[in-house]
Image (cartoon, rainbow, N blue to C red; front, side, top):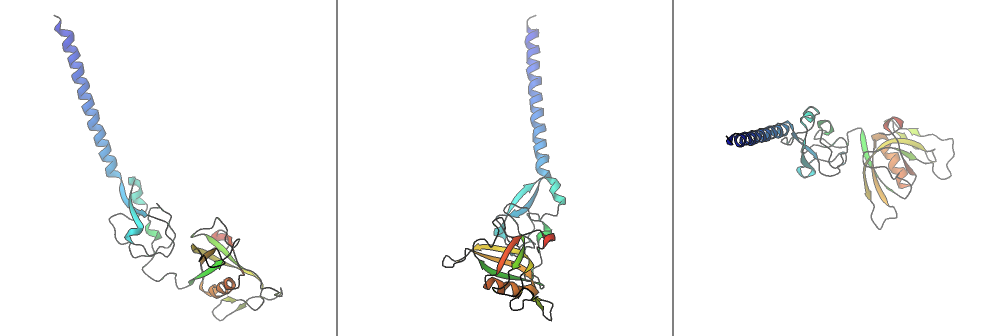
Amino acid sequence: MRLGPVRRRRWRWISAGVLLVALGAGANVAIGLSQQEQVAVLAADRDLSAGHVLAEEDVRVVRLDGAAAGLGLVEARSHQAFGKRLAVPLTDGTPLNRSALGAKEQYPPQDQAIVSAAVGPGVLPGSAEEGSPVAAIITPASGAPGDQAPQETDDGAAQEAPGAQGRSVPARIHRVQQADAASSATTVVELVVQAPDAQAVARAAGEERLRLALVSRTEGGL
């Protein structure tokens, strides 16, 4: 007569064990489903500038939620991205989107040019970085009369007349790097500009008449 409570307790323990096994199996299934829903994509392994030719050492594999599959990201098993130039700059850890990849052709495009300028303190805003749209401001030459305007060449470029007034040129920062320690300038800036403006911007940089203002693309940036 005393065996009844013992049997009931035993059945309770058996039921609890079965329930724990079922819960564990359900958790494993849920984990497996969540892993199946993830997608492996490529992401920048360091900061990359626009125009950079993408190589395997520039990227790493990251796993994102399955919903990212419809965002146009480059899958980890794809090798078609390597050898292509970036159309936009990427910061470290940014997933690689197919829209960020340009063709395997020369950079910059035919209608643009890259101008290098060594600049001193106060020329480049501290918050400017690679990819930032800027206005490249050409200041008037020393002692220039104020009533002279830029002269247009046959190809439509607005070339500066001697002593011309200053003007603003739409540009984008391609790369920023420290200048040689022996140089009096502190920073070397590479600017992407429209090809017809390249000569005027390069001349102004050489004459230390170039200033850069951080703007939006709608306010004069490139």
